[in-house]
Image (cartoon, rainbow, N blue to C red):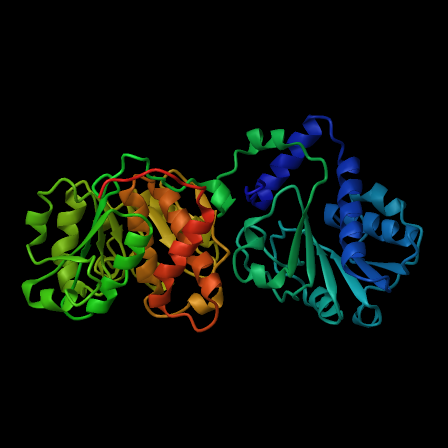
Length: 475
């Protein structure tokens, strides 16, 4: 699986390693341009094409693509932003077709524009005259990334025109998955240009696209019983009782053998109106922690700051695995050290900013830093969820549909994480798997989703992912 995501500087390292292994730049450029031409030929009927070429290697790929399309009879012209330099010079010399002015009118009169101006490593904002030419195009196919898109962060450098197709090489960049980059790239094709996988030993990537191939779900063996599958305890508040109940069902659906809601005595009867399989205990948290079987806790949903501030320090000091969400994160506003001892933190962008400060343009770096500071896995919730481990590993999740943006969905996610932790799944793997299952379940449900729909859909996703099973378990 090609799940590694390479930032532009890492892709440059990979190219350098490939050259050292005997793969000349000219061969890689020829393969890249040919891959662009092939992807366009497969997705668009023959039409008038204008290839916009920058001065660097991205432009070199464009010259090759222009030549390849012209060779099969497509009407192709080239427009340049600046004369080619370095390795692109030879590729430009191979173009014998028409060269037209770099102007909006030229882009507007063709059927397809190939954007080979700048690649993923652009370090400045796109000049307005270049943006104007791209904006005039009817349809665009981009080489590597749409010009102006930061391949490391997914941010726009200036005005970036969305494209219909992006062809990139060897491995995707984080910017292909991170927003707004993901919405600007259109269909993303990852092309093989014969760059050897051995170069990854030099790069040693630390960022991946989240996918089931990245982790392994826990599977009970034939001797399993409810205690071996783990006991999850959720700290429940007295006001927003629904928020504490929402993680319960997904934790159980994800495989936890038992689940208890720990609450104050005056709220116990409310919680007991929930599903019959929910245990409710109004004993204080300190007493419940004396039971060593309660290894995984969820703290935050619906608690309120006062209850969170009273209970979170007890849990963090206990050495148990703690999923910290919602109010328990907000209770640590401006005090990231107060979250040391947590296992997984699940903030949305606003909660993250309250504790760690503004995310800034490089959200991957910000989430990595938060994981390093706290020693916890940090899962930044959103349409492009980022999951960072304290050791620097990062996964970007891109399977969440927009209808997952509904109240309570984040509480459900915390429950899935807890259910997987309870079965012994490592924290980063559990957070990655939970994020992916969350998105997959939402996709299964479709529009009209509410948070209460998710647990049954999670069970369906797990069933579809499970191998055939036989044998008996103890009750």
